[in-house]
Length: 257
Image 1 (cartoon, helix red, strand yellow):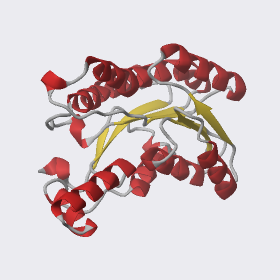
Image 2 (cartoon, rainbow, N blue to C red):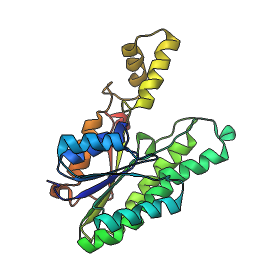
Image 3 (tube, rainbow, N blue to C red):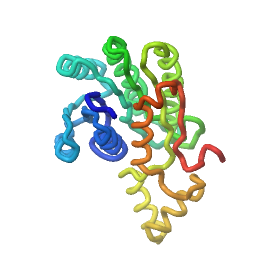
């Protein structure tokens, strides 16, 4: 379905980013894997499993010159990036009055400014080809708050505004821009947190997971990263050409509570 398309996924060494890359590769897209260090091992695995072209790139998303250099190199080599998945994220945990200013600036740069720069740099070639898909990773916390995570809540809320603005500007160009808002995923960070919780509360991993999800997702199970990937593939398909500017929850009913 996506044969010949080129998809850039940021923060793609592991976790959700890697799962999204695998889903797009399974649909035939050629993949550009990005992370702070080049994800060579992940790239080789995807290349061998899906028989598609894979490019691994590294860039510090807190640095605009690094982003611009990466995109200049990619566009010179590939001609266009057809699909941009803004997945890379940083988050920190602290009350507002104790939140370090440097960490605030880092979160703004990676979670918000980097998607802006990647979109603005990818758009001219997308417009020239009359086709493009931009998918910004939001969160359940794009629509609600949680304590001690002001950087994450703020940037994930703002990414919805960016999504709507880009969608309106590109509505007649063959380009769509949407946001996905997952609930709790079994990412390495979450799995590690649950292991620590289980140890501190003298619980099994299953019990800790059950208690953690019970107050969040009515489904009482993790959101499947493969299901998020399937939604990304759908949004890149012809059937989704009239979906733009949307914020799509994938949260086991959490946003309905």
